[in-house]
Amino acid sequence: MSDEEHHFDSKADAGASKTYPQQAGAIRKNGYIVIKARPCKVVEVSTSKTGKHGHAKCHFVGIDIFNGKKLEDIVPSSHNCDVPHVNRTDYQLIDISEDGFDDLRLPTDDNLLSQIKDGFADGKDLVVTVMSAMGEEQICALKDIGDMKGKQELLIPKQRNLAFTAG
Image (cartoon, rainbow, N blue to C red):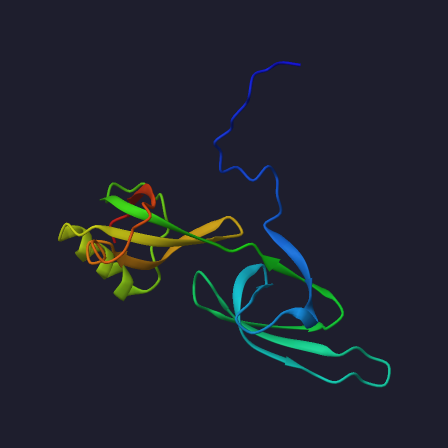
């Protein structure tokens, strides 16, 4: 065997699943679930009683974490549901280009989008929070780290160029 060490700096998931199974009866409000092939945050869960020969059923109401659409599903409580692996990562905003190459999906919230563009135009030190699930990612929050300097120790977030399409 060789004494060489191999180091791999990769964000590849090596074929890991984008979801994992969880029993429907164990999924709670504010958790995540896949409804109609979309990652959703659970906003409401209700469970019906079992019938004479049936299973208890869970009624899920979820909001798509990327487009904000309301989705519903009814699943027997003893069956498994897909739950997405949801990650949130902070990135320091270092550039916004409008040359037509999309690096990251824009926020669906127009107020957040205008805060990002205006803050960057004003030269503020901005950190964006990116939510990712099931192969999609989107900016979901914004922090001005210039306001925090001197108040607390800062962890330097990852840097990422964000390319926005004009529109």
